[in-house]
Image (cartoon, rainbow, N blue to C red; front, side):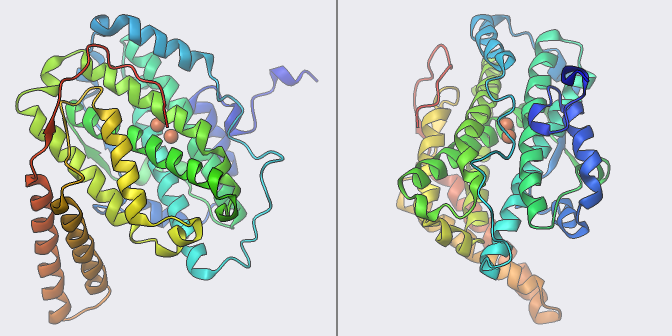
Length: 377
Ligand SMILES: [Fe+2]
Ligand SMILES: [Fe+2]
């Protein structure tokens, strides 16, 4: 039998998102209802699925950034990570049975949330490719959907070893979709790709220096992984560059809003996983600041402002937001009038803390003519 005529059986080898999803579908028998239920959650802190005005997106003309665009697409077509996202001899045996229960719980939660976030990108990009007619735009979204399907599939492989997995087919059909105008998709998705890069590379470099903290083999894959995310972020930087209005005038206020929301969400979510960060040997405050620093530096390629993350009001505001969120979570588990009032005040405190973060004056700078950057961390 000629192996080349057989369809791939692993998401790492899938060359389109559709192929990757079909492979996942075939494995869905083993999926756990509990993991899927977690991935179905829609709170301010959990990854969401998005939909947008696909016609407006399809109307983008990439002519103003053509040279950078073609170079980036060529890099993605060359597919440097084909076959990478699969278990190989570097995949050490994981002792899930004897993992400390708190760590196990937080780590599984981390994997489910990462898988949902990867898959959220896959769903949005795949839909854009399906609905569009613009050859530049559809080619880009097809390539990005391919990568995200591999990423989600690989995390699901890791989860399956722990006896849980997210049913991606079910999520596609059943999870609620949030509508964002295209420009909000650009800001939010650009930032989530770039912060994804910064998060993965920061953990990878830390574990390179402290391999004794690498309690799971998946972290060995983070370097190539974050390069995919970096390229996806580059694509959104170029899309934003096609229209100067997107990064000027009143839109700068929206950019500031998304920067604040994305950073604050990461901070609060990471502080919900103390055992996970302790096992990695990472202080979540240090990690947050590292990731914000890297993401800010990268975002100067296209955004005219960065947040003043070294302002003492920034850290103080994040701490207040995190505390309000922890109190809200505690009150949510209880019933009665006291818990109800507790929830109301915690929500008000969270809103006030977020507003205070947003009000910190941003730093302005000149944006370069060509946004293209290479991963440098
Ligand atoms: Fe990804
Ligand atoms: Fe991505």
